[in-house]
Amino acid sequence: MRTKKNSRTLTQRQLRVGEMIKQALGTIFMRGEAKIPNIETSSITVTEVRMSPDLKSARAFVLPLGGKNSDEIIDILKEFSFIVRKVLSKKISTKFLPKIFFVKDESFDYAEKIENLIKKTNSQEKYE
Image (tube, rainbow, N blue to C red; front, side, top):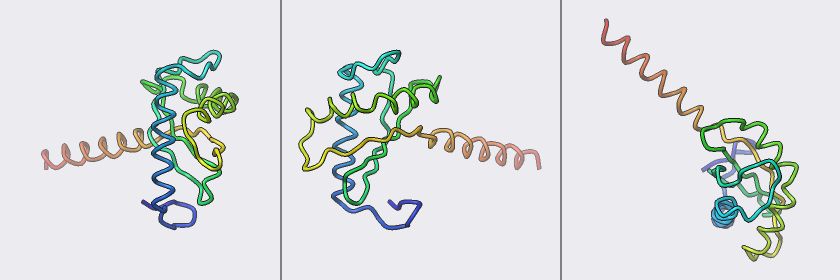
């Protein structure tokens, strides 16, 4: 797996800590342990967590179920990330608790776009 900015591979530690945080965030959202106003956290899916090389910051790629109101939900999560971080501190034990940045996961949209292009080219080949 490579990052886009500096094209360095992620270390084993970054992957391991990212996966641990991903699982903890998923549990927190599923159980509703982070009391975030105006949001139903059980409908949030954490698809990936990417750690910085120093493990002090994490980008959590999230997507609400059905993808509805995703921009609003991401903005609310960004605003109340300190609540999620507080609950996360009780779930994991690391030397430094990373600062969490929530990002909308657009990989499913990209995959759907690619799938539609493949279907379009396949249907055009049938008629030729």
